[in-house]
Length: 56
Image 1: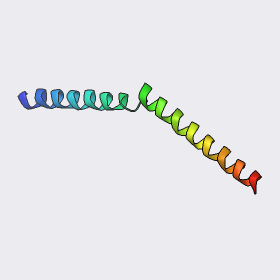
Image 2: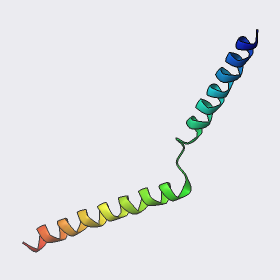
Image 3: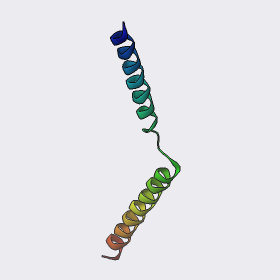
């Protein structure tokens, strides 16, 4: 009976930790801001390439 209770506690703990790990997949504000900076830099690079093509 004692082993059964320990198994229930262990399974519950693992389930709780698994659910907590799923919450870490959401993007935070810093990650979102970083993505926006990356997109802006990529767009600026494309505009520079276009300007270089027009200069030729």
